[in-house]
Image (tube, rainbow, N blue to C red; front, side, top):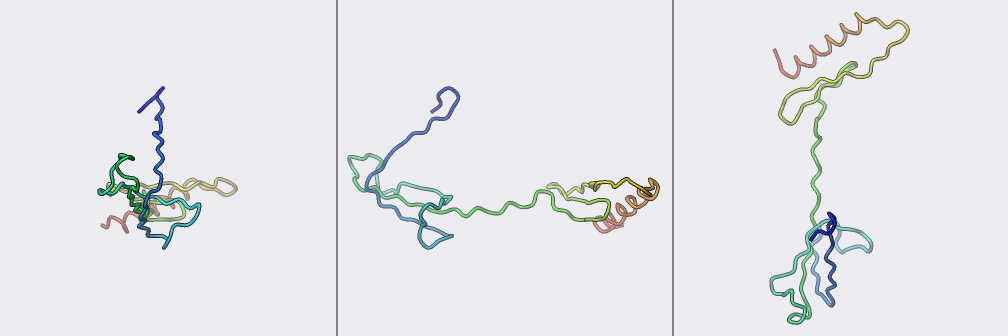
Amino acid sequence: MYKNNEKVWNNNTHLSVNLKTQLRSDRRMKTGKGYPGVLQLDEESTVDEFLCRDPHFTFTEIVPQPTPKRSPRVYDGDYITVTRRADGSYHPNFKPMKVGEGFSVARYASNVANELLWALEGLVGK
């Protein structure tokens, strides 16, 4: 149900319910702690409040799965890092350059090229 492009909540109150919990993180529910999961009206119950005075609900906790690292680093050097994308391709990334007294463009470029060569040799092979 939408009203003025906003989702409207349907509020209901179920009095005198039997609630069975299936928890993974705690033996019993703790006061004030939120649990991610699914609440379901059991089949033996009915939604009609007049026919069923003690509806039976079951709450099953869902333990969230850790999200895999999106682009894991497969090489971490002094000048570059190489990450692997979801499609298996490699993506080189430059680290911040410290330009100051004694900075040599030729030496920096040579070091970056060497590191890129070492990274790719180790990842792709010859």
